Length: 436
Length: 142
Picture 1 (cartoon, each protein chain N blue to C red):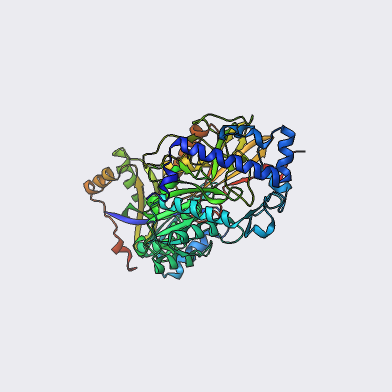
Picture 2 (cartoon, rainbow over the protein chains, first blue to last red):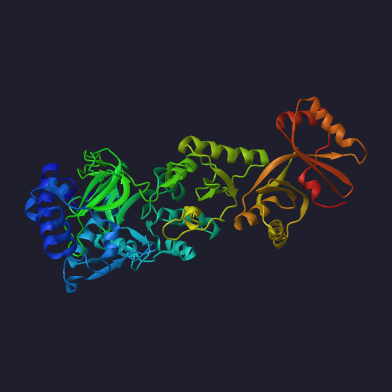
């Protein structure tokens, strides 16, 4: 079902006209109300009157995560605090947290885009949605919550964690939709039998997974494990939270709600705009945001854009599923490596579980890679030779996929720590012990 | 002709083998034979137990990677050269041994063996009228 056919199926020309009008309005608002942007634009010699259409967006300055930190907590807000009705913040694990503020209109728009995402996945007011994203300062829980309520779904605001209770309520309440991170969905799926449940006890038929990069193979694995249709919801708190984009049943990219969030792709090094189809860093401009409007915010997520009409009928621009970020890319002996490449190889082989941990270290000034993979609980070989063949096979598959030699260590099931939020896949010991 | 053997994946950690044995003890499962094959990182624990299905369930609940495999089990006469005689027959048939272990049960000497070709091994056993040990033979000690 298409929640807002007028917008989601709008002609490209009408969409550009709408975006142009909103961009002009946005640039005026930030220039007049946010000293940070006025300075940046003055430095570049750009005035609001230079912006005539959406094409002029390339004249505007970029915004980076550090800009949000430098203006902590509220200096990027474009309205007085009396108009801010809610504040969310990132965890701030790598420095000061970043804060974002919402006006009542922002919350309304958030509900709207979230409803579009859920409708895209086939969710209706009949559904019971278990929201297992964290509630609180993190945008995941409350974002999905309000969107699902807006559609008339029955919302179970269980938040993240407590696996036993998740499964019990899923069974008792007959949840038909599970919303959480893909790694937590995998963990919950593994935990079914352990807590005495089987898929027959569950009514869940749709998964809305996001908040971390994951592969198409993982999507298929989750569909198989749960017997559901799995969808990718994309978002980040700086732009809005979950609901910036979502994939439709065609799974050929995520439809961006581009009347609110205008996407661009730029080269990771030169920051020059790239043509549709070319991969680079994904950049968003919040066309309608009032609380904390951002110009050309660089997400560091790597993607491509596709403006062709989708088989689902929507005309909105599609972004390629995010499987990596320019800043979680590891450089191992000069070779670029994304953790998602490892996940892809393991799931394609299908002979171990998808739970892994990558240790990066340095030995004699050479980077070393060790991959710990959990054995499948019910698929054990009987001879040492077969086990060694399995680790060799993983080693060879990784070598041909990423061009790096990796020490593969098989470990027992359930020995790699599970995350209830975003998964930790890499431990880079090089960062802990820097070379003098 | 075959007997069910449990294989358990065991990481090399101090005291780890004993935690597995404790799971079996708690579930009142008896171990008739046990052998460990080891590498530097992990080992494979192979066992013949009184109730293989119950053992698999108990170990999986505790998150061990465990599986049942069918292996050949033969009775040997308790005299010098009997094992050598059996292995000669397999060698003559061109079979190679993947692993082998022996144990005694009551008055019986028993050989557990896995070859690279189970069907062919069964032919050898039938042709030479070797005596197979069945799980029921391991129910009561004589």
